[in-house]
Image (cartoon, rainbow, N blue to C red; front, side, top):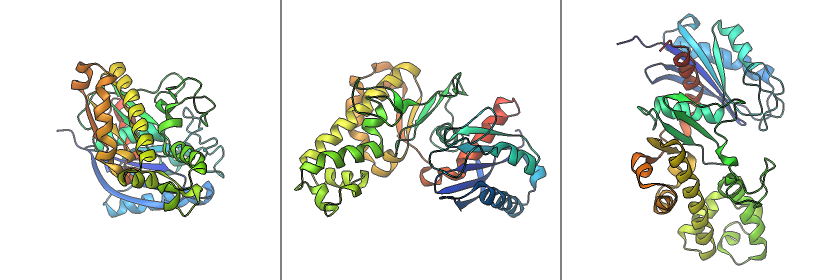
Amino acid sequence: MTQPRYVIGYDVGGTKLGIGLASTDGKLLGSAMLPNKDTYPEDVLPEALRISKQLLADAGLSTKDLAAFGISSPYPADPVNGIMTAPTNNKFWRNVPIRKYFEDNLGIAGCFENDANCAALAEWFFGAGRGCKDFIFLTMSTGIGAGIIAADKLVRGKGFFAGELGHMVVKPDGRYCNCGLRGCYEAYCGGRAIAMHLQAELRTMPENIMVKMVDGKLEDIDMIVFEKAVRAGDAYAMEQWDEMCRLNAQVFGGLLNTFNPERLVLGTFAWAIGDLFMDPIRKYLPKYCWKQTLQDCELVAGELKREMAAYAGPAAAINFLKEKGEL
């Protein structure tokens, strides 16, 4: 058996920066989290480096033992050069050459991937996608992003836009999406878009249970309030929920017939909400795909849950070594 190697990774989020140390055989050896809301990179990156060295020391390792590092970054970015150009959730991080920073300070090569791809890689190497050669992970949270593994390889696309499944148009000329298109999947099934839609509609429904749950503060209506209303049996909420689940099934069916994956792994909504979310989707799914592709695919919730930030960066590093033929 090949001796495992060691990698470290960084997941740059809008409120936290996750750091994970792992081995290439799928074991997390250490992790840490740094606050990252309204921070400046010149403050955060040196601290991330210091913590990295502490994690290595705690595991009995040093930077000389590392084979690679990985960075999981929000977009917009310049993935070719490893630069965070203008991430929407990090307003002070502009044109940050983050990959070069860690190359220079760790003395090893590393990679830069978008965060949705890294989430898919994390589930592939450490979670619900283990052992698959064809699988898709969807983030299913505030927005909808995805990472696609096809024929044992991450699909990036010519311009690195592959996996933007949230911006498939499911209803031509439908709701406006913040990407500039109309009728996007995310505009109907992303958490933020759902909340905004409910807030707008409920302005004329002051007696609805959701309005009462938030004491009339419509801006506080979110997916948690929505879920509670559905569980309470509110007719309006149940109708909206059913439509959301049907649209999810429509998109998933298209993915099954397009990619014929072994597994479709779903993020936050699937594991946080459970059967209330998954069962209606499973009910509708046969309407939108062939029997054969449905039989080939397992629809499951992600396994890494709130620990994703520890795994995303190391998973990118493992895939970096894999693509170089070093694993």
